[in-house]
Image (tube, rainbow, N blue to C red; front, top):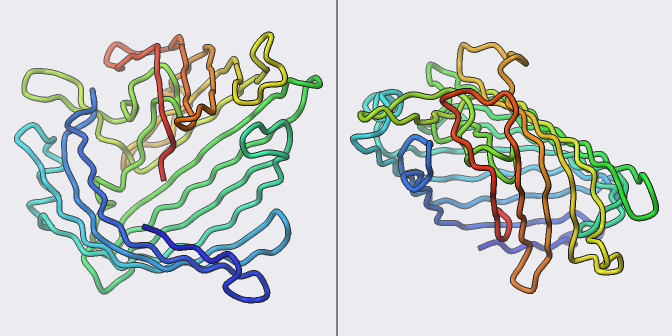
Length: 293
């Protein structure tokens, strides 16, 4: 639950507070290492506008995470729980910068969308880590009703004070909002379960990018709830001690449909993986309903 007042001060500084009870269960995901977490916490954020398109944000919060591993969990996860315990408390702070000059949020044709963020687990609690992300999207019209979108994401995280980056703070790639054509969260370092199935571990370094040509549904140019696109995606995740290698990137190309339906935003895609490796988990047809927050 979040309450946001965009005009907390007369100068336009916004303030929000949140309380949450969030559960993560990866045992239902194909190819992702199984674990469960339940995180209860709260935070306060301030947003400081610099202009119509630019803003800074800063926040602080506290959360407690209960970690559950199972017999099929990888040894890396089991070792973390054995060394640091199955309950982790975090005092976290974050800062961010955003620039959004797109002409529309629902049906953008041109503009720039940039988001940079840094999250730090502060001393004084169990988890000590930092996690930085960079997101960029550039849209440029090609014709009156078509546009080219170029986007990319970088991520890096690590621990400090003798602690590694907690495995449940790892980056993951693959899926509708990442590299399409691969199972959600299935790219990057992996291990095997007791019957030989591939399990993804996530990593502390993330590189993804996409080139997408967007155009209206034939015969429905005036209906901005539907949109088609052709795309080319690339990306991967790398673990601690691994160097980012562009030779290890995974690629895909295909066709996608976005529909802002009465039930919420829907995304469909059909992708053909390129340079897929024998251990990759392939999922050509993918679907997503709603958004994450």
